[in-house]
Length: 342
Image (cartoon, rainbow, N blue to C red; front, side, top):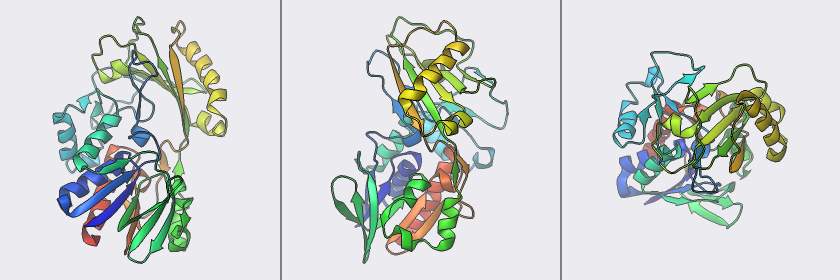
């Protein structure tokens, strides 16, 4: 039985694990490692320190269909809709460009519920706080080194983390990459931003004419949403949570500053935009160094194969598009390679 390691418990990683299980069933052992303490990656859902508030999506906010993939990815949307994980967006997102070719969906239980669904379907062995630092070619297998906890051996490795983190890996990765591959990977460009989640007590009511709002006249804030309203989720007894995303220029300008320094700046601008906003019980600040892919890996649709035997392959939205359909395309592309290699 082949032992496959998928590095990254985000959307692409979870889809790879799920599709591989459905294709090869029990002929393969699937292991998923993530350096974080929970699933989701940039689709993670944050719980408040106090369980009396609504959870908050600090990364991806909603899922929009891409017209080019409406038919080919229909089964993925149908599965999530029938499971109640996705629901059509019902409220007003102020400032969102209207386009009848796109359908927007929200997640009543938070964006991480999409990732959790596919991971559960995969039956993979899932390990958190497993930070991969090096890959070493050992004959017909890979020895994978962790920051803490030593090494393990696998027959195939799939890397779905952001490209800069792939390029930082120790071991044999450096000399296995061709000059062209290294140049292709170095061409990837990401946006960066900060996000805040404000968690309020159950007695607070936030009344706005929108469920989310894009801001166009602020040097700092780009997007605001009230989570329970955006998700159209009935959560009796829970206080609201409000999520704020900064603009990309602001994120890039302050990228190397600490969250503690940036949080007061964002809050000051938020109170200017929403005067009279109540005092939250707690606040969480997240820095997204690799928020969305602005320039993907050229000439590598869906994946890049570093070595055929033993298989080492890179994938994720860096090789497609920074949205749900892009991750599906990458996972399908990776699956095709795995099927012929295992």
